[in-house]
Image: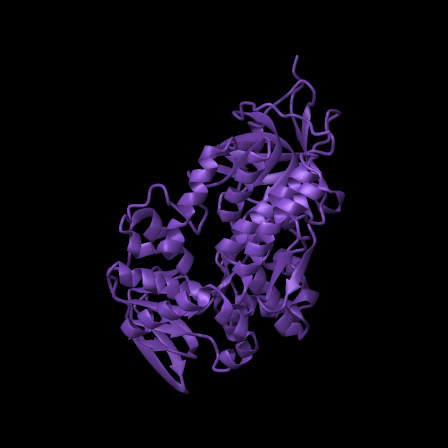
Length: 501
């Protein structure tokens, strides 16, 4: 029998049947459907409003000309509208920094979610947790990438969607992946001049992708993609198979240097926008202890999940690009499948109903992922830009260079955690999100072993920067005089709290 949960004030503590972390397409779709199925659902998200990165600022963007961002962006309005009409509760500005087992006498194997809003720490107890943390851009460490004027395509889209800000001076786009061309198309719609688009995909990328071309031609993306490519290439000089990409300048970006067919070229630029694909955002899932597998096609780690989004940790599910890169539409359908899985696990529906209602979502998911393999192979990030050398900075937080990592490996360090102990890479505010893959790739390169044998950082809570003041503000209850944050390998942090009189 299912247990009924009454909505409670989440000002300090609260309970829920389902807690969803992340308000992108997967999180919105999952929270909406779960609430419609009768689950008391709470959606936690760092941003001030829902939408995630894909539909960022969709309710408040100053870009009111709908042609600039395109129909795919405005599709998010339907997700946001359905969510707001549902009974799901939304907690904006919520930074989730820990998820653990509830160890109080009243727990039923529930999870405690520790998060902060406005510098105040709060706790939420949920019977099931769904992580919809989305994707992040793959690190693109090239010489000069820390210069002012060099940003990622994701950052450029944030500026465009949230504030309507676009480059004013000479701009160059460089890298590989569909997002690079999408951004170029959006910039052209907004009247931005793009001096060049430098493709880093090697010449044989198309040949390797050809075995998957039939599915791509049959997919809904073929027509739209072809139109987008033609529009961009008609308006922007596109140079393919560039090597040796560098950002150059004294105190800021002044020019972009690259090699093409054995010759070095430079372009004057005030803005360089980099992108070489996206990878799952795995920090929270790894800290929880979920098993991850190596995706050799995308060269990244992704959580091991079943067809309902369940991870290897009981009561923890994942949906969307955080569970494996597949795009916004696929994330939406995976979110709904995960919601059905959670409703079934919590006793809100039987197996027959779950499977029956999942049929349409599985069909739409198959359609949304058709042709994805073609993109994955075609836009594979070249090894040159995944495994930098020399004094190229690979950990921006601690300013660690590629040669420092390589020299440390030569001293006998065989894994990311040893390198972290020597150099502090992965110990900055980003907690390894922007250097983890690069460090592992460099170690693999030096040891001449597969990256999956190198492993990844051992991540611990809190996964986001946290002040002592926030820790001190954790709610206190009469039932428990200490909060316990469980870590992998049975390590714990106990936060002592005075007993209530």
